[in-house]
Image 1 (cartoon, helix red, strand yellow):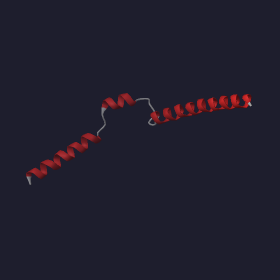
Image 2 (cartoon, one colour):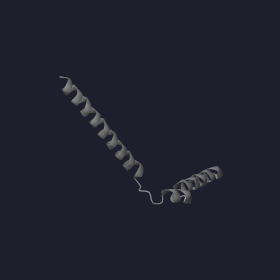
Image 3 (spheres, one colour):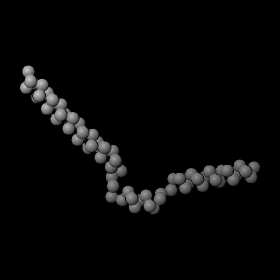
Length: 67
């Protein structure tokens, strides 16, 4: 019974510790948007797609000129 109570207390302590806010993480995130990584990835993807489309257009133009 004592072991069960100890495990429950340790589990509760671990849960509270894991869910609590860390002051260091608050300082790092200050000023950054919650979805910053996702929005940056989206912008990078759009830029890459634009470059690929430009390259495809140049290749098509070269093929048209050779015919």
